[in-house]
Image 1 (spheres, rainbow, N blue to C red):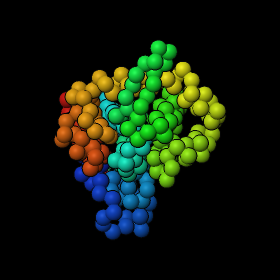
Image 2: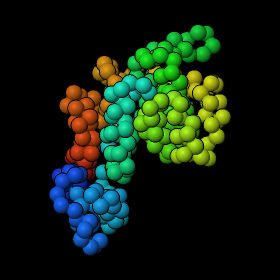
Image 3: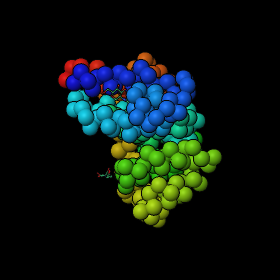
Length: 240
Ligand SMILES: *[C@@H]1O[C@H](CO)[C@@H](O)[C@H](O)[C@H]1NC(C)=O
Ligand SMILES: *[C@@H]1O[C@H](CO)[C@@H](O)[C@H](O)[C@H]1NC(C)=O
């Protein structure tokens, strides 16, 4: 357990990409010598995996929930620059849930739920596509959401993002979900989940860590999700 802690500390303390001289110039056996070296040489995942196989994992993954909406500029920035890249590095110690809904309003017309989105109908469509994908392919949904949010036109990009990252999923099936009862139900679940937040969200993206939202956790998640999750994981490891 001590040893694992050291590894996590190493990742947290030494994760400063873009600094120091190139360790990749040295022989490959030094690449895993520190997390920083591993990041710079593009082999962090490999090194972490090697380390984790050697050591017993001691704590549960840190639960991170992100409440966003598809066209909000801050959400797009966070997903593309922070959330997606961090999720790749933190795969083993972060349990991530993404809830596309945000400041959407919901009403019931007697047969189905009707949604009104902050940035208009296109945003509702983007939220729905992302929600259907999260329901259809848990493993590939995040990279597709990243691909959409990184594109100039979030909605137009959706089809090519799916074709690129989940070619096994037919676009017609996605749109079947989007326009059908399943999509309506899934979005209603997102509404319930978002409305249940305590404290209620006042902006997006809204982040909770192990079910908790504070200004401090939000700020840390926005500025360095990697450090935050590493630190939380360390604390949890110390108590397990
Ligand atoms: C792998 O573990 C060693 C100690 O066993 C540590 O020094 C090194 O920093 C770790 N590498 C990474 C990438 O965490
Ligand atoms: C997909 O959504 C339906 C309706 O909300 C739900 O019953 C089902 O469990 C979801 N499946 C996954 C994998 O999330």
